[in-house]
Length: 456
Ligand code: FCB
Image 1 (spheres, protein in one colour):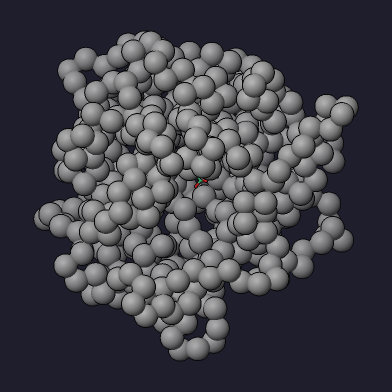
Image 2 (cartoon, helix red, strand yellow):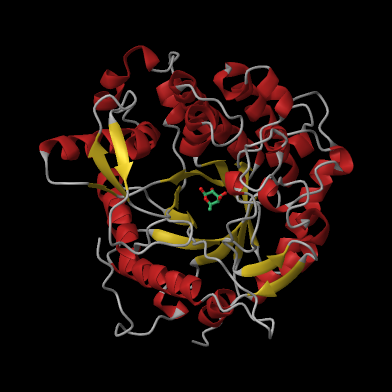
C-alpha cells in the first residue's frame, strides 16, 4: 500500500492511451441539478431525507445545489473546454415519473434530458446515462421502496421510457450507480436515504436492485440500437489489519460482501457461498430465475474507485463480525479517504484476473480537499491535481498490463451536494461558490485540460 510512484516516470501524455479512450467527468442528478420543484418533478427520497433534522451534516439539501437544471449550458461548456470526449450524468427518476410510475411520463422532465443530451452532442461530448444514482421517487419508498419487488417493475418501466426517448442519441447506459451504497448505506448504516438500519432489509434491497439491473438490460437493448450497457460498482482493494489468521479470514468475509457479492452474481457465479452461509435468516429471498437475470450479459463493467480498506476481525460486531480500521501512517484526503493509486492497480488487476470482463470503465475516481479561493481568484488545489496525476499514472500502468480499461471519468466536474456531508466536501475540478453560483476552474481542472489537450 505504499505509493512510491514519482515523477521520474516518463511524462504522462494523452497519447499513452488509445485514441478512442473515453475521457470524461461524472456527475449525478440530485447532487447538481437543484430545481427540485421545476417542471413537475416529484419528491425523491433524498428531498425527504434532507428535510429530516440531523441527517445532513450541514443541515443542507440538494434543493438548489449547483442549479445545473438552469445553468447546464455553462456546465457543458466547461466540460467540453477541458477537452473531454464523454460526460457521465444521471437521470432523476422523479422528473420522469413524479410519483414513481404511471401511464404517462412527465414530458417536461423528458424534454430537459433531451435538451441536455443534445447540448452534449453539440459540444462533442458522448452522453453516458446513469439511470439510478440514488434519487428514488419518495412515493415508491412509501410503498416499500427497493425492498418491495414492485419497485423492480417500476424501474423497468422507467428504463423503458427513458431509453425509448433518448436511445437515438445515447448509446452508453449505466443501470445502477454503486448498488452497495444504495443497499447498505441507505438501509443498514442509515446514513443515506431512506435512512433505515436493518441488515435483512439492506440485503433484500441489494438483491432487488441487482435483479432490476438484469431486467433493464434487454429493455435498453430493445429500444437502443448498438446500446452498450453495464453497472457501476464501488469496489475496494482490501488488506488485513494484521497477518493473523483471524484478520485474514475477516478480510475475506468483508471482500465477500463488499466486492464479490456483486461481481460473482453479475458474472454468473451466484452469490458467494462463504457469505451466504454466514447470513442465515438474513439472506435475501431469491426467486427462481433471479440469478440468471442478474447474470444477463453486459458490455462493460463500470468501476468507481476511491480507496482501499483495512479490515480486522471483530467478533460480535454485526453478522459479518468485521471492522474497517484506520491504518496509521497512510496518506489521506481531507475527507479521510486513503489515497492509494497502487490500490487502483491492485483492484483492477484482481478484477481482470478473477472475472475477465471484456471492457472496464473507471466510471468515478476523485478526491475531496478543503479548497480555498485565493485573493487573486485562483483555487490552488495542488493536492487534488497530484491525486489526479498519480491515478492517471496508475491507469497507464493498468492499461500497459493489458487490463481492458477503456475510459476514465473524474468525479466530479463541479463541487456539489455530497450526500450526508452536504456542501462540506468538495470533489470538483471546478469550484462552485454556492452563494453566487460562480464557477471557477481549479488548478486540478486546468491540469486535466492540459493533459487532455496534450499541453503538459
Ligand atoms: C461515490 C458516489 C458519488 C460521490 C462520490 C464522492 O460513492 O457515487 O455520487 O458522492 O462517491
